[in-house]
Image (cartoon, rainbow, N blue to C red; front, side, top):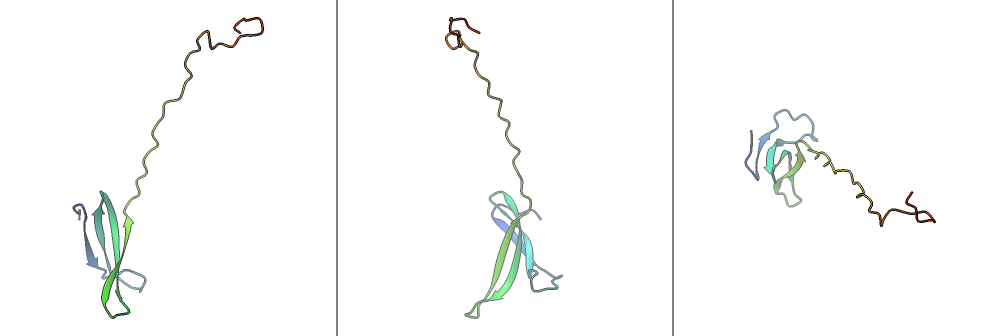
Amino acid sequence: MPNKENEGCLFRNKKKERESQPDYSGQAMIGGVEYWISGWVNVSQAGLHYVKQRYNAKEVVEQPPTETPPVTAPPETPEQTPKDDMGLPF
């Protein structure tokens, strides 16, 4: 189910078999990135029920390295050409 920006949805996990598995799961779109959401129902020390959530990016998209053109030295001018002791350029 596609989400709009900064929206998501959670559904009760009907297949939960262990306490470590989330009570709820779903997905969200935040900052243009799609996330999987997992939620666990907990009770605070004050006795209040809350849902602890975890967000994992659906797919980490690595940007391909940008190709930098090779750096080439500019052609040497006669003033830059090294000369031997006799003043000959070679």
